[in-house]
Length: 166
Ligand code: CMP
Image (cartoon, rainbow, N blue to C red; front, side, top):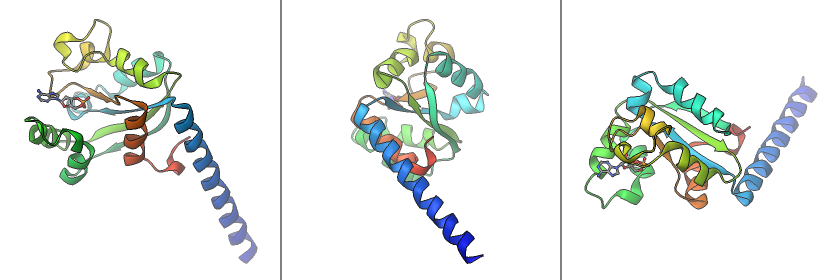
């Protein structure tokens, strides 16, 4: 019994170390981005359609979960926009219903994902992009995508521990 528990603890420790090394490697290479499928797209049953475009775009899903953000968590996530006039509306909207949060991996992930999702305002989004296909408006624009490697890592860490990435 005692030995089994010790073995279990050692394996657990090893898994945590491996996850930590993997996360550090991802950050060094800069090949990850972070995305959220936003409330209106989740409610409209567009999770599958959006994930299909993401996978067909060559991205690998490293981590993913469905989560209902609290007002505090949504405010913290979007704190960089706290001085903008739309901040309150953005925070309220992001905790209206659950979202999908995910870390995606690909060479040149941040820029390639921004190309795949299209312009922030769907009215300007190129044909064939996720926002052109699924977004309703500037505020309800279906998906979020990180704007830099640095923010990709901050946002990924906001939602996922090292042990949740595979
Ligand atoms: P996102 O990529 O998630 O980053 C910040 C979000 O704020 C952006 O997508 C838009 O959904 C939202 N946003 C940007 N500008 C406006 C605006 N003028 N009014 C409402 N929401 C906005």
